[in-house]
Image (tube, rainbow, N blue to C red; front, side, top):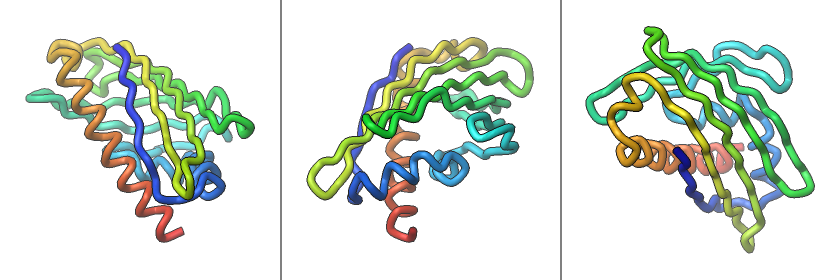
Length: 149
């Protein structure tokens, strides 16, 4: 399944991009995600909680930063997660692109994910809706962090 969405942040690109590169700090803005271990400068372990319709699951995930391209302000992140109860998992490739938009920053996010287990049974439309809600909360939290930084 592919989810593609975007949002604007009321801060210039030269403030937003360095924050997006600070994975532990920006992870605090992602709803229901906690970095549990820093393996190295590009690899992190995380606990992720997901509720889709009547289904709630927790994942143990490994997050790997594949690329940070400062010239194009593009990041590629790979996520591999297993349900804590061992019933399924998720693999995702997330591409984020930031671009100056006047005095603001436009952020485009694309996630290509393969989901197995109980979450996969609830349907793509519900999953996509939850993903878009989480992205909207991430955008709000990121903007708040930028205001206080």
